[in-house]
Image (cartoon, rainbow, N blue to C red):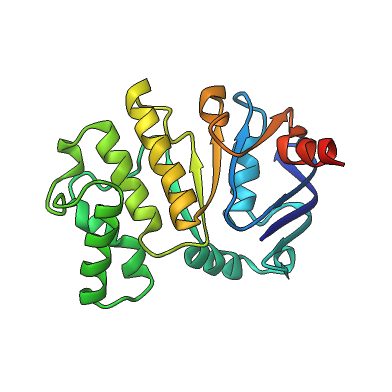
Length: 232
């Protein structure tokens, strides 16, 4: 589904140029649950900005569903993002003064769905994440774990092709973190949702079927490739 070949990323600050990603080569198949692990400053967030069509300023080639999107315009990137990706963040990024239903409905509104279709999909998605009946609640009155479930419901409401989750358990206690991880694993195993999870937590990463480790903007290990080599 996703193929990155020789991806390099540079940032400019004044007259200086910083090389942030170095010759990244990654393939991610439909239905995978992948962890991208690395310390702060390793380049993992920069990488997922490229994977999630948030950043079109890079060198190298990116094929999505066999389409050479490295040639796309910024407008085309935006369209790809809206139609294909769901995002889950550490700090939830919910509209705290809007109802749970209104938060979950946002991607559906952007997609031009009818009010009847939106209402049905919101209820269905909230049930899927264990929040049936919470439509009229306000996020500001909910626990961190419940807010993250709302965030996940919003991310999957429009049936994206894949999810990108950036430190999704970073603001939660260990018990709640495990509940959220169980939800992600259920979405992956039962719904076939492709999930790319950025984390610095080895305990979170080890629950994923594949772990890609990044240090200083370089992929230094990929458990999928290592397993393939071991099988040869």
